[in-house]
Image (cartoon, rainbow, N blue to C red; front, top):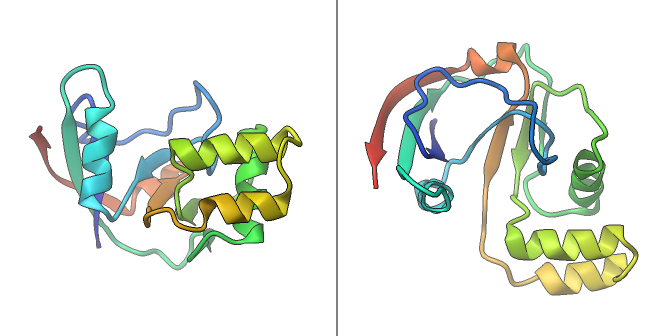
Length: 150
């Protein structure tokens, strides 16, 4: 499977960064199967908009959780990760809480909207995808192919 990572630089040897804000699925190396999404990630950088391309080879020995769609379990998992609660998965895959959806998640976390209101607000969002490599063992499933500058 081809995966893409939008960045400000060429990333031949991905690393798990454990600094900055908590992300949807916790700390890790974030990729997507959607090239247009990686392009948006790259264009969000201040300079040097780069899309990195990798080949991903599944490894059944890894602990993987997949969310095929936005569900209650997905929402609860993201809320926990955004609060800094760690998980033990090597890889987490599923829809992304983009900036708009993140605002709704934050409203839900702060008690400003109900769970039901959250689902109404996110109902018509375009599809997204992210796959996060959370351990060094998981990163070994990625093989760098090439990068290109936007």
